[in-house]
Image (cartoon, rainbow, N blue to C red; front, side):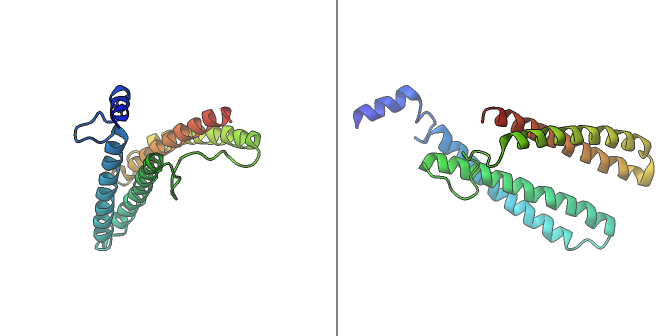
Length: 167
């Protein structure tokens, strides 16, 4: 057992205070964040239910949708870390999995989707500029949010494209 303790020290596996590994610490942080996301999501939904104004409800629903995605992402990352620690692949884990089907077609689709997203960003920017004064700037705020979403989509698709090159 003494040899194992020495190996842990050498490789820094138990390098955090409290005797837990860096991965365990990160998992704990993800799980804590996931719990906070749950509480925030419930508060948003409760608030949404009390909104009589259609515009306010619409904006709050956009936020709720994003919060639901954030919670799903945090859950997937926590499940992935937990699976790595336990040497399992729990439901919702992002670990492993080779893309099924013809990879060439998926690469081609990824290229087309990247083009569509980049074209969409250009169009949204033009629309944001042209509609900046409409409805007290609401259209510009919504279009700016859509631009950020599309930029995120580009980043995700570029990651996928790089991943597909390795398969």
